[in-house]
Image (cartoon, rainbow, N blue to C red; front, side, top):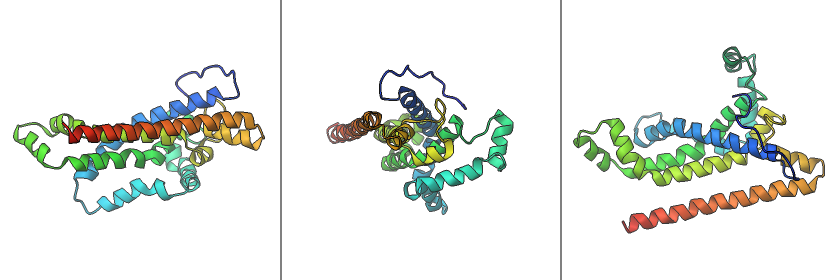
Length: 238
């Protein structure tokens, strides 16, 4: 996973298609992996009464308040080939975790985790215990109850979590810059390309990329609010 999975379209304008394609790939992989990892974490947080729950919730929310450079700095320390994590990755894959596409994915998972886990936790908590207890009385296994009761009820939360996680990953800058640098075709995402265009006074390219991100962000938020409104109407008028 140290190189992108798909080839980028050929560039034919001021917009860096390679960086855009890499960004979309990073966002898609990060979102998919966070769906797998974030679902059990959110489910546990919504159901547990353990004393460590506030600590876990604080850890999940930490990327929301930490400057991206702080997160990127400590990830660099942990992923360095001389550190245990970086050494383990090097021994298993033969590649370094820093300044690689794989490193961007791992860092993006950590950085975007709150945008996946918190909406899912809220959705799971809103289900209540009644529907799940009813499923148990009907002899449904915990796994059956989760897939037949919890998931349908949490569809609204899944939509919000998926869209926000994808959009947040697309807009990452500080973390990916510190961890991945600016390697074309491997770690050069569109936010890095935009920053470099501004630094080199290439305002035409910067405008193209900035406008694209602006429109994308607006569309994402419009989708979330529209879907939220429709779900609310469906609940109010079943």
